Image (tube, rainbow, N blue to C red):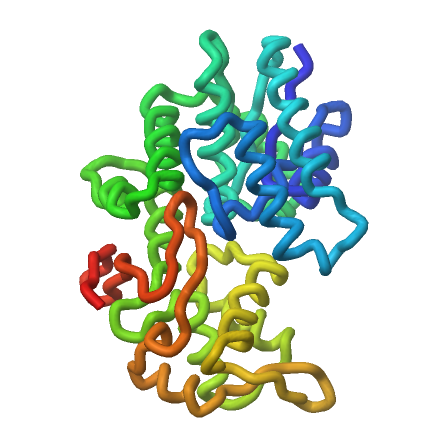
Length: 312
């Protein structure tokens, strides 16, 4: 039976087809760590929510794409494969971007009685050598019931309005593998208790505290601070824009050796010293099913490494 390989994006699909040219690959193509992912919606309705966000946030970067049509086609291909009882093989990397997609696909497949998926044990990246990919494929196996349950719970926690559910998932005394590590990284995107910054934003300010940096240098240096880099350039600079286009900017545009770049403002310097960014810059951001607005209740405690309900 012809298998459908579900993977992270176009580059992953091309890598798989370089090893298995006669197999069909389905790139999932969604930055689920950015924007609203509310729970309780069917796949089609959620994809409409996602496409509206992607168009609003990234449409100007590629005006030729029809995000709604792309996600609808993607969903139809997965659902058609499920209905046709085709073998569905999940091939994802270990970082946050991939693990969110993996959990969503497992959740969707699990909703159809009698359907199941295979997984390729893999840490990544998918642009590894031909032999490594071929060896990994030969080790594919059915997803274990415990793995399926973990992925479903992870997805439900991610789409919940209560971030303590994800915090609890990551603290369970069980082997949730890449999912728990990805979940902890997600929680680090909540505003810090002391400075109001996400980890991504805090890393950018740390780099810029050493002096202005070009766009490329800032992206590369921040990526090197990640245990499992997961941010593409669009998502990264979207986070940076929040620090530029706010009432009291922490970062300003600057020319660095003739190239566009960024530099710290006085407010940015104060933030590196512990000033709460959100006291003068109200937040409006979704993390999964949680909508953070104004001076949000939920914060990430970097010392206790947990989500806390702060009283501001």
